[in-house]
Length: 454
View (cartoon, rainbow, N blue to C red):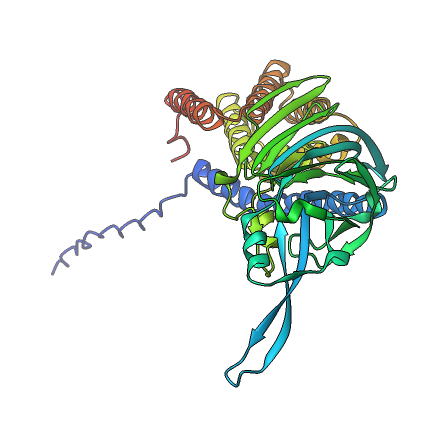
């Protein structure tokens, strides 16, 4: 009987296990989402910056409107003496014709004493600084050698057209008729335009008498001007020797123009300032021929800006430049809380926290239009910090941790406010502060488990 051999089944080879795909680190994804949220927050941040620019332009428009109705900034030039004369010209054919020209003589000595009283006018939400001034101009004129030379050459003075004039840029500001005292006699003035030294002003006819034939002889003059204006007051040092003194109750002057005061004193009740300028400090002579000298003279002006410093928009614009820093550090603090407390905070909640931080700047601008900037900053910071602290507590239900986030925000807002108050050392303080903050974040990050979830 035949036996059938047993067939041993071939051993089965185990199928290779499929390769496991590497899972993405949830923490990495969370950081990516936070970065995307920060980019999204740049959009409302840009809208807030546009709002600040718009409100500042509205303020400037309101101030310009007040200035148009009251009187604009004032530029005072002079006084100057204009002497027309006629002379004979002979052409190539021997024909003789009469030509007309003039000289403009500037003072030998010029002393200006001015008192400027400021007041504020409100247009909507905005204040504009305007002023009433009483300005006295006194000094002497000297008969120039150039005039005697012309007379020796046969020139004839048009005595009826000789005048002494003062340039005033906005005639609406004149409150009382201006009278020029020339060599002891009063001369009423009328509106004058198209002078070589100023665009518009007042002038009076004067009698030169024997003065024009006596080189070096001086004639005294005095005039008083009661003048309204806004924003700024400029004076041109047209004398050979100039002494200009101004006093005001404005506690926040800004000295402007081509010359700074030789001496000044600024207190909470106002300021006094004195300028001393000589002809060698300027680029025009004491006797001017025919030509437009207005631009040259205006470049030598000195003066004071009396505009009330409006800093809320400037400081709000500076503060919003730190928005990225505040948002980034707040998000890092929330992320560290999420990691240490094992609490899951959704990306949408990060977005809401970021929007609250952006809203701070809108609150700052709107409140600062009614309160001082410092108080507005405090109110906006307290509101924002309280809102975010309460929201974090609602998300994680850990009171101590939520208060730590609130304390972090308080420190950040205090730090930014200190930087806003600094001017000379703002960059230094900001750089050192950022270095310390970065060092603290780096040290704390070493305690984190960044590979969790792999």
